[in-house]
Image 1 (cartoon, rainbow, N blue to C red):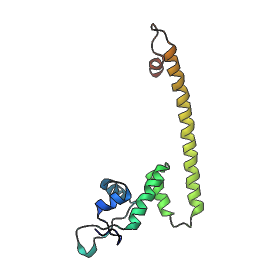
Image 2 (image 1 turned 30 degrees about the vertical axis):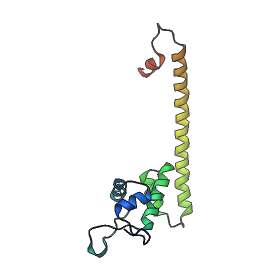
Image 3 (image 1 turned 45 degrees about the vertical axis):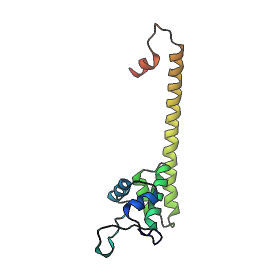
Image 4 (image 1 turned 60 degrees about the horizontal axis):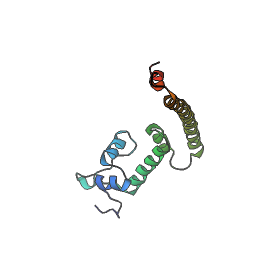
Length: 135
């Protein structure tokens, strides 16, 4: 397919976007990516550069922790005129991430303590980590 003209088969589209074909189909089923029309009544869908950019946007948003539902909301606001709405979504995502980080720090502290207890146990005692998990 002529990629310079902005026309991609699904395989070359997926490759250009850095995903696999099933990801493209999944995004289409979820409504994140429109199904392109088949030109001239042919049997092959053709994708363009805008589709590649859209998939890259989705993947970038996911790397920042946005769920597919949140990505859908961002896509509705992507024309650049809804910065306040985007900021609200991003601020909520930041709150969520900070809560997850706090949870991870708590988990780290407990696990670190249990690992230290395991190192200090005597052979006649049960493993402190196993005992803790059985509670």
